[in-house]
Structures are given as structure tokens and as C-alpha cells.
Length: 367
Image 1 (cartoon, rainbow, N blue to C red):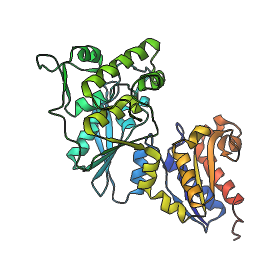
Image 2 (cartoon, one colour):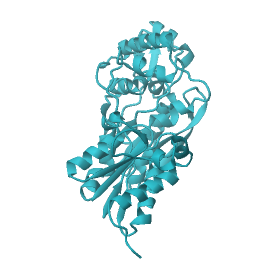
Image 3 (tube, one colour):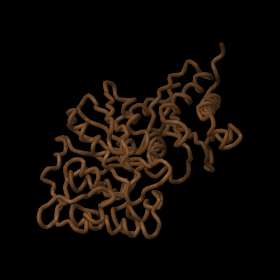
Image 4 (cartoon, helix red, strand yellow):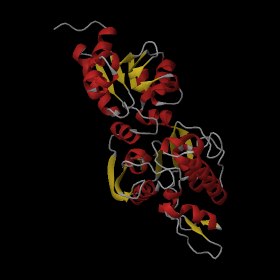
């Protein structure tokens, strides 16, 4: 058999590449002669950079030491440069929620470090840019990112304002213009933003109302963030109502308005970069999975995209999840005896899941 193994990460327990290798090893332990190909997936969030690099021959990975983390502490940014000049960055690397140690910062977390990472990618010769939007710690509308690339808030006398995170509300209130004259130009091949989010910037479905609470914002903070984003949109222009502009705390809006970035479904774009449709079309079975599988998994997320590609190609698919109540899904919690046991050693139980699937889908070779 020809088997494609294309899981997303099992968030908080194991990355997509390691999950794929564990599933593949489990399969080979039962059916050693089968052709098993690992294509770890992502949807624009966690693991996007790793997935693209793993599938792109000749990709180079660059660290960017000392960029600003979401709370201002230095962290290491990262981007990949593909052979065709496309740079790939993942917002969560420098501006992600897990980088906040101990205390969430709904009003002061910044995307500046992602802008500094993108600047380094431009310096390295990037001619096109893909940015995975997911896991953001901030709701700054991409302000910090654009400030790192040269955008400046100015008062009515043309003076640059202190727009540091702690002073951002005062700066926005005092700003007469947003000066983009020193903003670094977008790469000539354009900018693509990868996300499974379709929310607009503002309103009941906007970045502050829907995602602010996940970043520590209470009712008062959500209202303040909404006013801040509305003022930011007045200065920057663009279309804050466009689907996806609410992604990553409004970073989708900031890059679309300032750089003309296009917003695309992350999972479909990553699948295309990996060559997944062609690989699936040549396979006899596709195995995918994620930490928690439910109905939303089929709505624009990585696992749903893999299943959709398999269905379109007429190839059967199997889903493995840490936990799930969906029929037909093989869960690690059932194999391990409990969700806690599965989380303690996910590689072991993914290996077991791969062996179980191999036994279900064919007769083991006899030695």
C-alpha cells in the first residue's frame, strides 16, 4: 500500500512532524513493505513554518535573535527562505501567546517582534512573503509589526509620537496621521496571510470581541480594544470589514491595509505548498489527526483540508485524535486508557495508533 501520513500538531503535546513520524513508525511495525510518506500539515497557526520547511527541498531556516517578544522581552524570531525567494514566517514564533510567562497582557502585548522578523527576511532577499497568522498574544491590529517596519504615528505638528505599547492609546488619541513614507515596501511577489479565521476587524465578530477574552481581556478591556482598533482603522484606512482582517488580533487587517496583503485559507495554501493533493491522489490511504477532533475540525482547519482532499481524490482517509466523540475516529485516550495518560506519552500512543490502523487496513506481511 501507499500511505500518506499528514497530521496537524497535537497542540500542547507533540508537533506535527513528530506525530507523523510516530504514526508512520507504528504503521511500518505491522506492514514494513508499504510505502509510507510523511507530510505534516498546518493551517497557518502553530507548525506552519515547520511543515513548509520539512516539505521544501533547499529551504533555509534563519533565526533572528533578540526581537521583541509580546511583552517586550527579547525572544528569537525565525523565518524560512525557500529556493524561489519566498519567505515564510509564523506570527506565533515571536508574538505568540505561549511566550507570555505567567501573566496575560491583553492591553500591551505587541506584534513588534514579528515585524522585526519580517524585516530580517526582507534583508535576506525575500521576494515573496507568506505569514501564518495564529496563536497571537496581542490585539494591536498589527500596529507593532508595522511600527517595526517604519510606520509612524504623528501629531498635528508632524512630530512622531511615543507609540510604545504602554502609551499606545494616548498616541492614537493624539495622532493626526499615520505616516507610511518610511514603511518598508512589500516584497515584489506580494504578501499572503494564512489563516482559518474569517472574522472582520471590528464589531461583535471582530478581533476584540471574539478573541480578546482568550488573551486575558475582560469586558472593560474588550471595549477599550474595540475603540483602539476603530481609531487605528480610521488612520490606516483599508477595509476593516473584509473577512480575515480580525485574524491574529487584527494583524490581518494591518498587513492587508498597509501592504496590500491577501488573506487566504491557511490549510489549503499549506497543502498546496506541500504538494499534498498530488501525493494523496497517488495513495491508497491518507492518515491525518490532531489533538481534539470535533465538527469544527472540518471547517477550514488542517485535518478538514486533508479529509477534503482525500474525498475529492476518492481516497479513503483515517483520523487519529487525542480526544474525540466523533464516530470512526481512533483516539489516543482510548488506546492509553485516559486523556491524561495519552498526553504524558503521545509518541508512544501515536505509534500504537499507526499499528492499529495498519492492522485494520490490510493483512500484515508474514516473515
